[in-house]
Amino acid sequence: MDAYLGEIRAFPYNFAPRYWLECMGQTLQVSQYPALYSIIGTKFGGSSTTYNLPDLRHKVIAQWGQGAGLSGYSFGQSLGANSVNLLPPQLPPHTHEWRAVRKVADSSIPSSGYLANIEDTIEFKTFTAAGTNLAPLHPATIGITGAGQAHENRQPALAMGFYICVDGGEYPMRP
Image 1 (cartoon, one colour):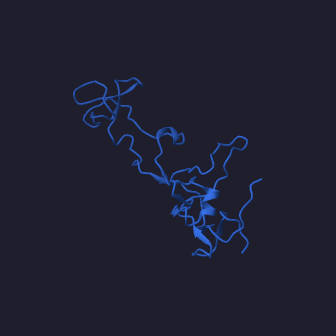
Image 2 (cartoon, helix red, strand yellow):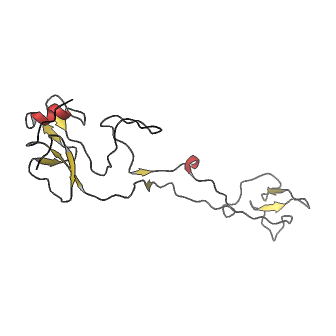
Image 3 (tube, one colour):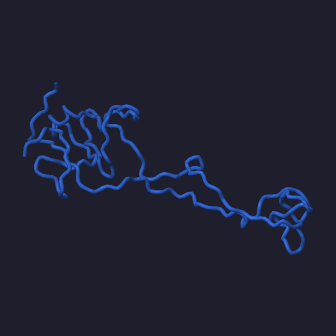
């Protein structure tokens, strides 16, 4: 199979062909594959005697650089997150329904945080049993939504193995 040393390919099987290793971020000794080290160095981690292969488990590949109107990425930069907690600024605009009665609070209309009409006007305020002080709405008035749990943040994908040619390939000549 013709390949360049350091070339990464996706294969439709679950084993590494001869002269290839799976891209799982594993640490290799420089002395084990010195030609591959001369090409990728410690770009994906390592030290003076070791280097790491790229870790492409649970990742999609993005082109480094910057296209017109797009974010710029450095070569070897890891991007994204497996899950995200949404905050109020990221929620879509929406409303919550609530209802009130147009009557003065009395024994038939609880005055423990529900909205009630002040005398015969159209102004609504909340009342507590202690009097006319403003108080928070009763929890049943507008329900709480959400539990603050993270959601998966992944585009549809097909799981395959990514493998890097570590030996037996042609050494790529730099231009």
